[in-house]
Amino acid sequence: HFSNAIVSHAMRQTAIQFYSQGLTIEGVLSTPNDAASKSGVVVVCHPHPVLGGDMDSPLVVAICNAIGQHDLATLRFNFRGVKGSEGQFSNGPGEQDDLAAAMTAMSRWPGIDRKRMGVAGYSFGAGVVIGALPILKAPKGLAAVAPPISTVRSISERINRPTLLISGTEDRVSPSVSLQRELDHVSGPVKFKEVQGADHLLAGYEE
Image 1: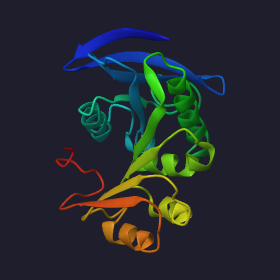
Image 2: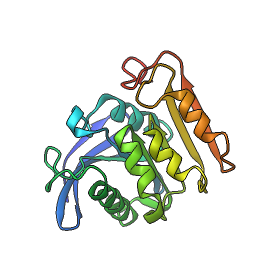
Image 3: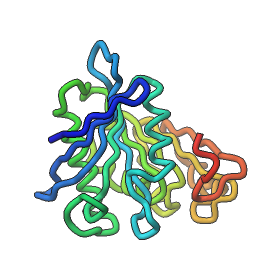
């Protein structure tokens, strides 16, 4: 389902809907305007809605814009119970199902290359991405911005696909020092990026 196609810069933005366990989930799919072939796609998860997070959060939009500069499509969506998405927020398990449903929707979407799919998330959304890894087979790589330390600890010994972790030096929720410590014993394909001066909100550091 789609409507309200908006042309912006080199990307076409389309409001879409998909289904997660019978719930209608709303999202925005951005695709390259001039794609000569199928595009890879990154599904992006937003921060905690109790703290005001949704798919229009500035950092989520910035992540999508940056990915779009590499001629990749992006899907950002509202978790269940957030704004126009049906259902009730479940603080983790249901949101993992929503992410899995988003990946399935993209794997069937016209113009999307299902062999080039990735996932990204910020804060709570990063925790959802990491927590859902056991049920996600499609993503070839993932990016987690300011992920909860506990979720990183849970997968540190079984990272088996290219992973980018990002945290600010002034982040008190996901301290970069603590994150780096969790990665000291990781042998998988992991890159860590520290953003100097940024706190958990990364306000002013979106680019």
